[in-house]
Length: 472
Image 1 (cartoon, rainbow, N blue to C red):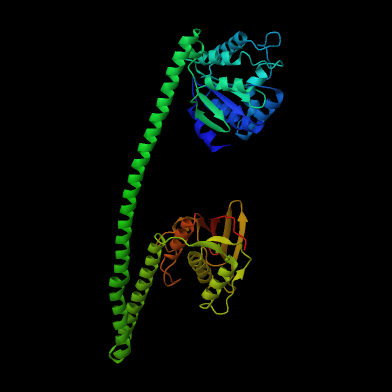
Image 2 (cartoon, helix red, strand yellow; image 1 turned 45 degrees about the vertical axis):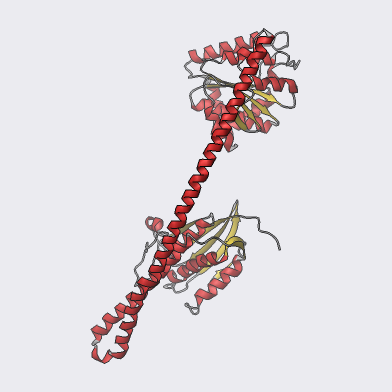
């Protein structure tokens, strides 16, 4: 169902009298079925009046909306009626129709329902003669009839069957109109006391006054929108300035981290290596071991800072989106990573192309393929496979391995910064790689997830929105 209709239907409440103009049976069902279903949810009796074909379509629409139609009918909560007992000599009678509605309303309240919700095709209700002469007058009286009642109504009109002059008059008599799947407050509505005024000069004067009020209301609303837009532009400009300033501070901080903090680490590593090389004869085995721990720790800290800088830069750099040959990219990344794993292989299926930043997607595959090779390295017959397919509006890529895997209790930790599931001794790494993957994919408007069974491998998947890839 149209999201606009879904959002606005709940605003139609007791005392509201609205009209629906529809061009096709599908449009009628798309508004009528949720309108009736909403009444059932609220403890109201929902009634629809129309021909047998319409009733069957409404039944199906209600079923699609999750309503147990037969059960609701048996309980008397839902009434689907194709009779026209209110006709007089085969012709539409305003008095009989209003009496019919009053009886239905009284019966509804006496049977314990919170309200009566009624919808019907007026082109069916007027009878075989299709005489719309009194319909506008009837709708005007109906607007008065609804006042103060626990009643919600939707009068439905097929555009192809109702004379244009009648449709024009109908717009004058309904506060709310549903047209082409849009539900809106009706600017053309005229209060019934103006329409029923018998003195033409008084009626005209009141009508001019009413329309003037409506025009002023519309103008005031327009001015309010302009004012709000102006304030919004000011807030956006102010926020942009604040973000620009924050980004500059972040860049300065990143520079400081990159140079001021990493310089001492490199000094620690460098001087420690000099001690190991130049004063090795003065050191015992334990002293050498301790210096090697210092060198290794400095290197790890330097790698960690580098990964964190990459992670922070991802949120600021603009995406350079283009068509990406994911098969070629995965082949190149696999060759790059396999240099550290002699004799290993990566099985690669043909992959659908993607729309994204090739440098960032390179980083995603580098981390995922690298992890798959790393965590399957303890297997006697390690396996890594990359696949991809289009599903609905997404293109999904998967990197699968037969490595150590992880348990379901650990899944939520995978994509957080520093969230490592294994020790540095078991598998080296900084714990930033998967967080970087998540940030890249989310910046592309996609999503990432992982599935695994402990000691039985893992599958890491990421989905990118499917784009219409331009053909060369």
